[in-house]
Length: 71
Image (cartoon, rainbow, N blue to C red; front, side, top):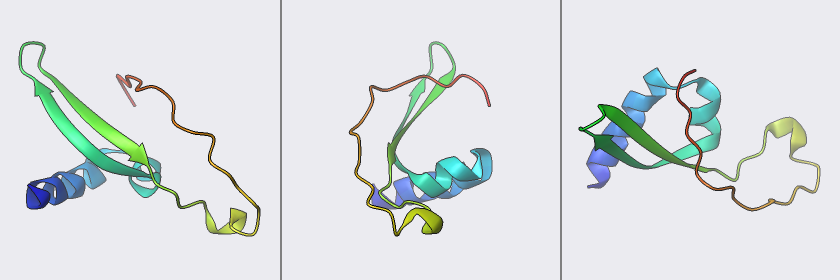
């Protein structure tokens, strides 16, 4: 299963905007064959940009899943 997830991560690297790949980690991919929709589930990584590292940052928690229908 892990190799499939790694392969999908590489594919998404070429499909998604760089910011999503840099700051989010792939959790799951599901295909809705009835509606011909690919659902990509991501979790935010805990890696703030280097220029913000000296600041004391604290996570605000997670938001509910949201649907992005176009870039």
